Image (tube, rainbow, N blue to C red; front, side, top):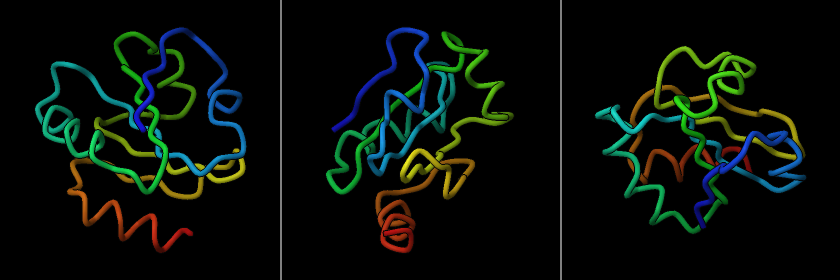
Length: 99
């Protein structure tokens, strides 16, 4: 399940206490484009996509300096940060290690 942030909302309110992968991306980013279909296939964690061009303040708030950046949240706390393209198996391994 992939959700796109549509308006400037409090990230922690959007994700609640669920286990979430938050993907900071941009439409012009090559690795982000390669990652997009992989995130659509994932069914083992909820995914929230945030366009850094639409929400630069939110990206700055979370210290996003490179994209794609994947933040893993559990109980409203960031538990892992991964920068760059990851394939489905790598994401699954990260999730399994955090579960």
